[in-house]
Image (cartoon, rainbow, N blue to C red):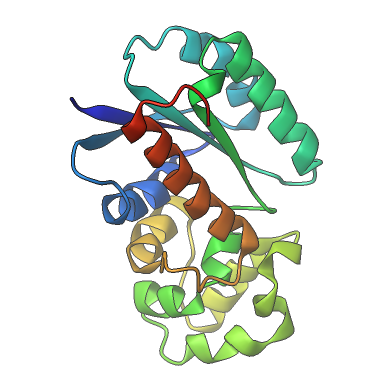
Length: 199
């Protein structure tokens, strides 16, 4: 039996990140597929319909969205409510990037150093802002600033494509929301592989 992890994301850069990370996490017998929306409003509006229409009985769902300036608890509650109404709530887990996807990258400057070829960047990880990157409200801007200082032009999709293959999944990332994402993926994979009815 092949099980599916369906990743529901708000933008292509998040899909690129997960496509690079998941092969290191998925056990044999699992495959991943992606539902990529055109921003958070599109996701919020259409996720219930998309989940309801998913016919694979062995599918589990990972829903991921940026927090941006919203209340992450309210976002998570709202998305779980939509998943429940779709009939897929018992096999769905929701994770929020606080505040943006780039927070994950700032939490692992070693990965940024390797992906963007910026020697010595990982030495900045001990600075206060990068020790607790989830507190940064403009992580994409900050990552762009770091890249520009080294004559690099950071773009979200291409940046994910370059950086994500080097992200460590061993718990060493300084972003708590990234660690929560990895833990959530582990939980959903365990649930799906045992045939449990609730995550």
